[in-house]
Length: 369
Image 1 (tube, rainbow, N blue to C red):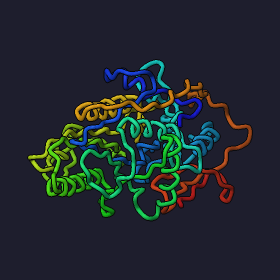
Image 2 (image 1 turned 180 degrees about the horizontal axis):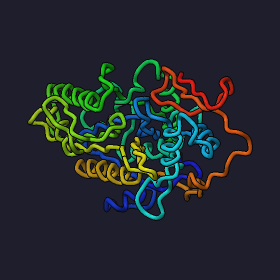
Image 3 (image 1 turned 180 degrees about the vertical axis):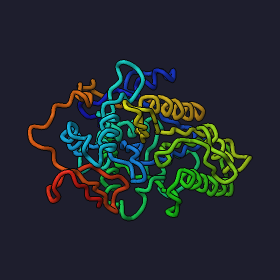
Image 4 (image 1 turned 90 degrees about the horizontal axis):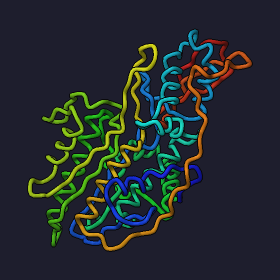
């Protein structure tokens, strides 16, 4: 259920993919010869995380931004200066290329939520475009579309956050949503660990699919949405494979499937890096940007077209986007009162930390929690 102020992303992608139909319509595959698996990360995909040295990524949320704004004028004296500057550099940066692009401010979470409503809305559009109908949890039936949770949010300590996330997806989707499956719980918290975990799932799935009675020879379509722990594809190794590009990651995943299994694999690496003013290096788990939405929707529509389209499901067109004031960091007005210190707030139930104010320690001390 699109919310007020949401930008229309998927309808534009449908036009770009050359799919015919009225605005707001989504295709559904009818031929059961193929199967689609969508692997979804959460951190860096359905929220924005800013790399912050050796600590967990800094969550882009309204509370952290408000604290950084209050601290901005005195940041040069603050021990968390680099964190404040990185957060504000991302907040004011454009999320996509083009003059009409919104900034990452539109992706900010509203505390205490750990996911962005706008990014969840975009994910729901991909779910709808895939033709997912739900009810296939734990099954491997040909012709299905399965949503697989590959995020650390699959761990038991994140179950409350996951339940809230699934409710939010359901609201945007207009029907009850739960992930159909999840990757194995044991995983090295590294980019190679994440890729290997998805590969292990595909290897087992390919074996199960091949051994099933009346096994389908239809193509297996694999879409991966992941920032790989906020890391670049910079030559790290996964098994015997060196991963230097998206193409390398896709080839590794294909190699995990039986050679006889026709497969199409698409990896959307939701990661960006740049050098901000003053030479500050910025690395971001950037969420589902417009480019990711276009590429992901094209892939899902191609999968549906290969299977044959039988009908079109009506989906309401999103309302026009409402402008949101962001302001560049240098435009931030100094606080009227002396800025409060900030601390690194981190808990076992979250993979990200957030700047938050506290009054217990005199300025400018910092307490790491």
